[in-house]
Amino acid sequence: MDWKHAVNDAAARLDGHIRRTPVIQSSDLWQAPVALKLEQMQHTGSFKARGAFNTLLSHEVPAAGVVAASGGNHGAAVAHAATALGHRAQIFVPEMAGPAKIALIRRTGATLTVVPGEYANALDAAREYEAETGAMQIHAYDAPATVAGQGTLTREWEEQGLEADTLLIAVGGGGLIAGALAWLQGRRRVVAVEPETSRALDAALEAGKPVDVEVSGVAANALGARRIGDICFGLAQSRLAATTLVGDAAINEAQRALWQTHRLLVEPAGATALAALRSGAYVPEPGERVAVLLCGGNVAPDPLPD
Image (cartoon, rainbow, N blue to C red; front, side):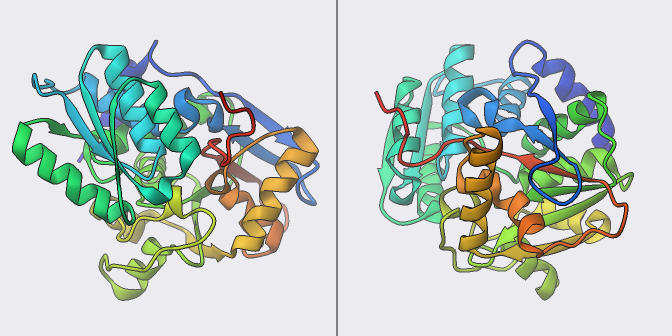
């Protein structure tokens, strides 16, 4: 697939529908300056709006509307995008999504069903709904339009003057990092950061194929995919520089550091990439310039509920 063309097309499509999120340089989070991309400021609090809008704008949406399964952020993004474009949306989330993300989806006006269990259970329910109604399924991470949409984030970052040698990116199902790998095509090092208890990509690379993993931990409602996407796995095999794992304590510490030093409020998933740097799970070479993607800001509980 010509990913560069796909991401460029997605960027043109998304113009006027997404926010161009800020970039800052921090000298307070590590022993050397670190570039931060503040994607938690995107619509509905995560990068997911990019893939959702790109999918809806590049496909003919049936009268039955769209359906999506989500740990929370993807569902909110699809619900927002569908509502903004005048489509019906049915969202399925697992109970582990938590009250803050469930409330966020409800505020969009989409129809929401909370499913017992984890993300995989919500995906099963969404597939049943798709078969019954003819609604268009919008996958959270393993679809070309989703990956191309997420790739616009890295494209935008480069337009904003990104100078880093290495990007640290948190991984759940793999749509975000797949978009980065698809766009960069090896021009910069990309390091995948996963929680120790939700390591779908690391396990797949170890096994030589996508495999099911158990998921748990503080970031599981955003990074808790049971199996890495096929698109991400294929791109990671040829273009990923490294993977690293971080524990819950390191994620929480990075979350606190972002708040205490810069008043940046992010969810655990949004702090996971930074946790690799602060905890020493990823150690840059001398002089290596590092950038960190803050991918989501939907903290739980909501600090300022309705």
